[in-house]
Image: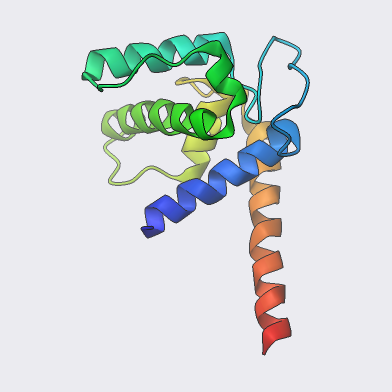
Length: 140
């Protein structure tokens, strides 16, 4: 796995912790979101539109896919990857930060009202790093 792939996987893990406590069987969210990443119908529809417009050869995602952690991760990668790339191109950036991807996941392409969400995801990421560092110290 590449460094970028590892960063995306760690971000996904943190987002799942924030969204559902990493429980794929969590009850539906207040606005009807489902699954480990609390995916909305709008997100599924948008991801299917992205796939169709880009000519990605895959079957459309279904609402039940949101409850499957592996399929939910695919939705996450396509959705945040597309909108993150658009953001980077519009803002003349060479790279897309995990913060931008987390904010897109929470607030859509416009990232409106995502400050509290990012703070939660960032805190989980920080805990993950600290846990690894503590384990490394214990091993030495």
